[in-house]
Image (cartoon, rainbow, N blue to C red; front, side):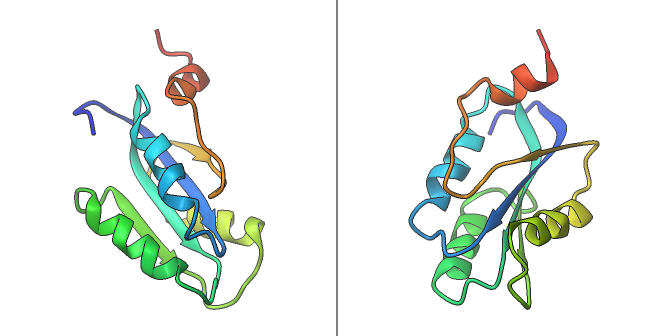
Length: 113
């Protein structure tokens, strides 16, 4: 992670995404403009997803990745809202667990020169 971070919370709803979530988080790490936090919301996956999310959390500096565990499966919208409720930053950026961002995505979105 670069030292300069912007006031952005990245929220990733996760449902049975053990095979794709590490790639999604890696695309956040590769951003030229680093977010202040990443929030991974497990939508009651019931498989190995939660363990994978905890492993990812342990890999990064404490507090940068937050894992939220939903008690019932409510769908992606509910998981996004749970992440939104936990977010501490001014701006929110949503990423699906099976998607990736190009390295300039956040910088372009904020239009920072």
